[in-house]
Length: 223
Length: 223
Image (cartoon, rainbow over all chains, first blue to last red; front, side):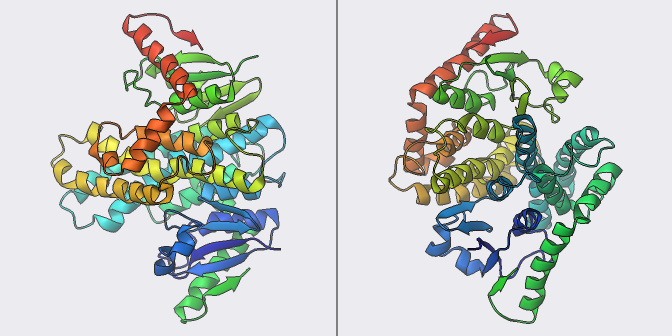
C-alpha cells in the first residue's frame, strides 16, 4: 500500500515547487517510497473531510493506513525515520538532524514567511516601503548565522540529511530576492540540493500538476 | 549523568515562564528526568562556545553526553521519545502527537511571535496602530481553527501529550491579551496545562532563576 499526500490542485506558486508538498515529495523520493497524491481545491481544503486530517485547512497531509500526519516538518521526519540516508541511526547524529529540521521550520522560515506575507498582502499599505527593510533585516540576520555555520561544507552535517532537505526547501522561498545572493555559500548549498536526482523527480511531479491543471483537467494524480 | 539545558541568566520575561526553556523544563519534569541548567548572559549566547551548540545564538540547548540538540520542538520530541506518557508508542497516536508538536511551532507560534515583535519593536512606528490589527487577525484565525478542533475535549488527542505541552506553551505567550479570551475552551485548555504538577515544578525552577538574578547572584543553577 502506498501512502497518500495532499497538494494544491492549483498551487499559488504556479509549479515552482515552493508549496509545502514539495519537501514531502522530495523526502519520499529520497527514501524511495512511491506515493499517491490527492489534489485539493481551496474550497475542498476547508471542508470537514480535510479539516479532520488538517485542522488548519492547509496542505500537505500524509496518510498511510491508520497513520495520519499533518505539518511538513512532522511528515518529513516521519518519512525520514526508517531511512538511514535521511535520518542517521546513531543518537548523536540523529539529534543533530532533527535539530536542523526543526530549525528550518522554527527559526529560518518564520521571518521568510513574514516577508512573503508583506509582499503578497501589504504592497499597497502606506507602511510597505518603510517596514519591508525591517522584515528583511530579520531574514538576513538568520541567513548570516546559517551561512557562518555552513562555511565551506557541502551540507550542515556529515552527508545530506533531512535537515538539509528542509533547510534548502525553506531557503528556496527566497528565490527571486537579493537576500540570498548576499551569501554565496547558501546559494551554492541550495543549488546542491536542487541538483539531487530525488529533488528533480519531486519537482517534475509537482510541475506536472501545474501543467495539467493549466490545461484544465483531472483532480487526481499519482507519482 | 544528568542532561544539561541552557536558559537566560536574565530572562526578558522576568520569570513569567514565557522563555523557550520553559517547555523543555516542563517536558523533563513530565518525563521525570532530573537536569542541570547552565545560565547564559546575552553576551555569552553570542560566543563561539554557545554558537557551536546553537548556531542562532538562542536558548535552549540540550546536552546529554554526546547527544546535543537545539530548537525547542526538537528537544521536546527528544525528551518525550522514551516516555509513553508524552509520546505514545503506537504509530498512529505517535504520528498525531508529533504533528501537534510541529503545528504548535510551525503554524500557531509564528503569527504570535510576529505580533509580539510588533509590540516590542514597533510601538513607536507610524504604522503600529494600523498594522497591529492585521497581525492579530492572523493570530485569531489560527486560534479559531484550534478552538474548533479542540471543542469540549480536555486535550488535543486521548490524554495529555507532548503536542499539548508545546501548544499550551505557545498559547501562554498570548497571556495578557484579549485574543485568547475570545475562545473560552482555549483559556480552559491553557489552565489545565498550567495545573499539572510537572508544569508547576518547571515554572518554579525558572522563576527561582529570576528571583536569584534579581538579588544579583550565581550563574549556575540545578533543578
